[in-house]
Amino acid sequence: MKRYEIIFLEKDTCLVFSISSFSPLKKLDDIKEDILNRKIYKCDVYFDFLLSNLNSNERFAKIKYSNGEFVDGTFEYVNFSRNNIIRKKATEFYKSNHKNFDWTLVSSTKKKMIEKGIVI
Image (tube, rainbow, N blue to C red; front, side, top):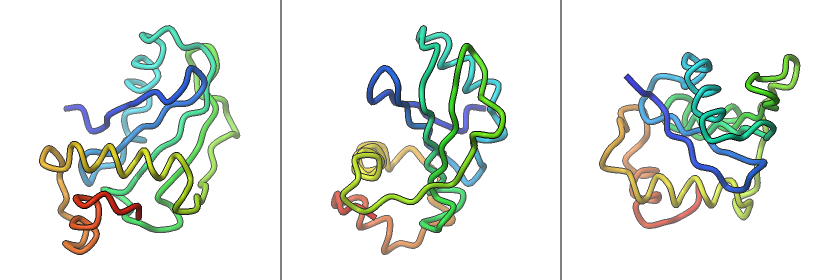
């Protein structure tokens, strides 16, 4: 079962979203294949773990991708301000798709904020 969705912001940036309470990190091989199938050979991959880690300091992470592989030693958790494009794109994504995902761990208040397009 696919537990993530990928959107490409630019040729060198993509976002991976958890779509259930299971972390997409368990599907790294599938994610690498999906990126390679788009004929992207080098990019920064950002993960949004909202549905698995909630809105915590470990919500967003970044790793470098090169030639079909994630680059060892480049994984790091990152924080973004509310006006950051990654956070805004994440809100747009979840707002557009909120009926399709497992929101078990997310509070009803946070879910309503996303449904209204409020960046969290």
